[in-house]
Length: 72
Image (tube, rainbow, N blue to C red; front, side):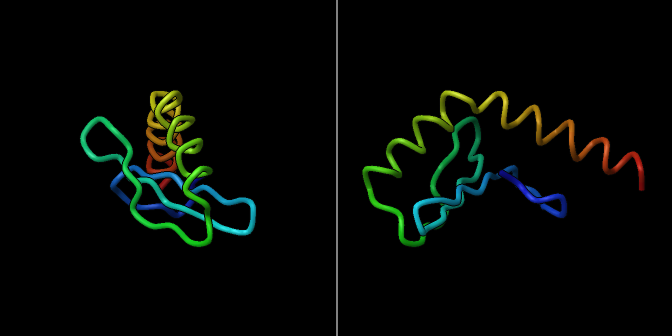
């Protein structure tokens, strides 16, 4: 997920199983920026899901924030 008041660079927050993580777009790949109380095995699964859906994440980020900026 991302929040409506986000900032560059493009990044995504992951929350679940009592923990959270933040992945940031670094060039063409998302990399783990920070994590709290998430197991390594879960981080591997999360990373795979983010990689498999990175185009969707980036496109939705750009569409949402373009629309938001156009409203300002």
